Length: 226
Ligand SMILES: Nc1ncnc2c1ncn2[C@@H]1O[C@H](COP(=O)(O)OP(=O)(O)O)[C@@H](O)[C@H]1O
Ligand SMILES: [Mg+2]
Image (cartoon, protein in one colour):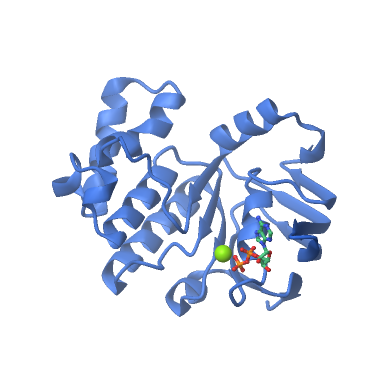
C-alpha cells in the first residue's frame, strides 16, 4: 500500500505573543505513490510544520490537503486519528517514545493497536531489533538509552507496521554514519517492497542524496530542486 499526497496553497500562521508568524506560505506540492522526497531548509523554515500537517497532527490555516484523494479538512478529529494510526509512521526529531515502556514495548505498541497476533508481533519486533542493533537494549527504558539508540527505537516503531506513508523529521540527527545507513536501508526496503511513500526533512547530505526528489523551504516558501 502506498500513499499519494496533494497540497494546494497550504499556509500556516501562528499567533505568537500578539505577533503573526507565517510558518508556511502557499505551499503547493504533490507526492506520488512510492516517492521518496527530501525537504531541506534552515532551522525555522517550516519543515516540521509541513510534516505535521502532512501527517495529520496539525491543521493548516488555509489551503487544501488531500491524502489518497480524501479531503482532510472534512474529517473530524477521530477520523483523522484513525487515518493517522492506520496509514502513517512517524519518526520524530525528539523521538517521543513512551517513557514507561521498554524498548520492546515501544516498538510493539503500534502493532498492538492494530490488533496483530502476539506471535506475529514477537517475530516482527525481534527482527527489527536485530537489524537496528537493539537486541541487547530490548528491556531498557528510553531514559536508559543513548540519543542514537532512542532514535533507532523511533525508526523501528515507525516502520514496524509497514505504513504506506513514512514521515521523518531529521531521522539521522543523532545517529552515527553506520546506523544512519542501516536506518536508510530499512526505509528503502519498505519503499521497494511495499511502495511506501516517504517525506523526510533533513540537513544530512547522506539522507538527502539518498532521496529521489528534493524540495527546499525558506521562510515558509518552497522551491522545487528536482
Ligand atoms: N507552535 C508554534 N507557535 C508559534 N510559532 C511556531 C510554532 N511552531 C513553529 N513556529 C514558528 O514557525 C516557523 C517554522 O517552524 P518549524 O516548522 O519548526 O521550522 P523547522 O522545522 O524548519 O525548523 C518558525 O518561525 C517557528 O518559530
Ligand atoms: Mg524542525
